[in-house]
Image (cartoon, rainbow, N blue to C red; front, side):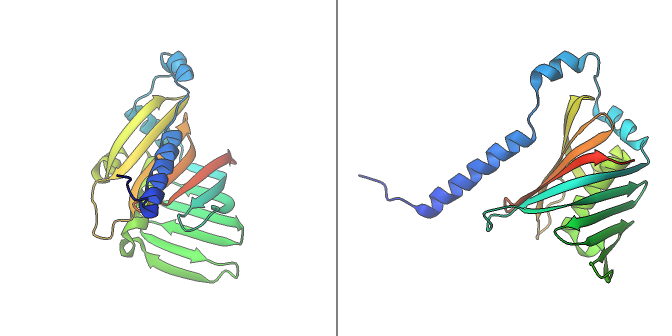
Length: 210
């Protein structure tokens, strides 16, 4: 007996397959390069955290793509990022339109193209707090804080490393599934955050200016 075709199930399987392929590509390494350089450039997670902690300020250009299941094409943006230890982060989006997001400790301020702002506490938005703290604690090299809030999976060496953060606490309104951070030496080169829904955002750090 022929099984009745289920378009919903087929679509779901296709989406899951695409997500699987995407995650594999995000976490992929050049293994030959990795093995060849591992002896000369071996580094563990504590060593990486020390290297990141030594860099107190970062300024870089970024490009971002947000992939939503409801859209055929990703939402694209670009601009600059500014990080100043221990708790200041600024994201200035220049395209497609001007916007500035500032995080200072637990307070977030968003400025539009007219420089009018809205301010709120990270405590009111747990998913955003998980995302920002994951990035902030990594840049700060705060391994203790990372272990407190995330399950950590690290691999690689100083030539190419991959750190996956999975939130330990799953809230009722859980949104963030995991964060994947790729880098080289003390430079973060790509940050990907994947939502429980399967939507994901890829931020590529193209050039450090500082």
